[in-house]
Each structure stands twice: as structure tokens, then as C-alpha cells.
Length: 128
Image 1 (cartoon, rainbow, N blue to C red):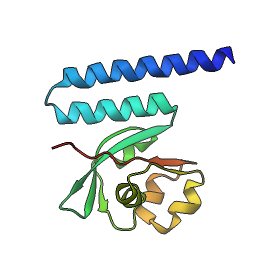
Image 2: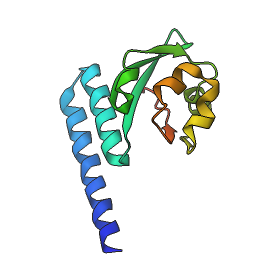
Image 3: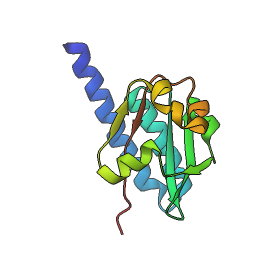
Image 4: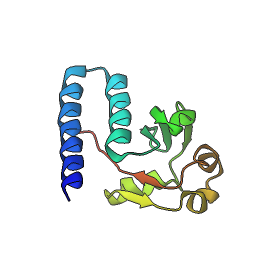
């Protein structure tokens, strides 16, 4: 499909551009996290995206958010029982296609994600 190849090329170009911008951000962690959220949303054509950090080993802190996820910015919530915990433990991305049903057990997350129909979670570990 010609249109499909063009979309793939546009996404690849955006990924390469993102890599350059991340390198250019230097040591500004907040700028890098915001860029990652913005570009993740654009590349996946999602309605929103967020970047979380783990604090104290048991708390997720949303440090960057875009689109419909902006209401979760600066939120802190327990890591236990979260979708992120499963992605971190397995090291694999997770896609939930029926967010309202899946997240119903996590009330604060469900409230923030009420307008989302799907949810993807990918763990990224810092290289030290």
C-alpha cells in the first residue's frame, strides 16, 4: 500500500528527528521527558501520552503528559497494582484495548483515563 509506506516513512523521520532533539536537550531531564511524551503521542497517533518516574521504589510520579493525559501531570500513585508495574517487571510493552474495563479496579487512574479507550505501557530503564 503506497499510503502505508508514506506513513511509515513519516514516522521513521519523526523518530530520527526526536533522537536529534533529545541529544540536543542535553541534561535537561524535564525537557527530554516532555519531548518523549509529545513524540510518543505523535508517532502512535494517540490521544495522549505520559512519562512516569518511580520514586522511592513504590510510587509512580507523572513528570510529563500530553493530550488527554495532561490531567495526570504531577500525579503520584502507588506502583503496586499498576499497569506500569507489569511492564517494568516483564520488560515488555503492554497494550490494553479496553481501558475502562481494565482500569476500573484502579479508581484514580480510571478517573484520569475515563476518556481513553486503549492504553499502552512501555518500561524504559535508565542506563547507568
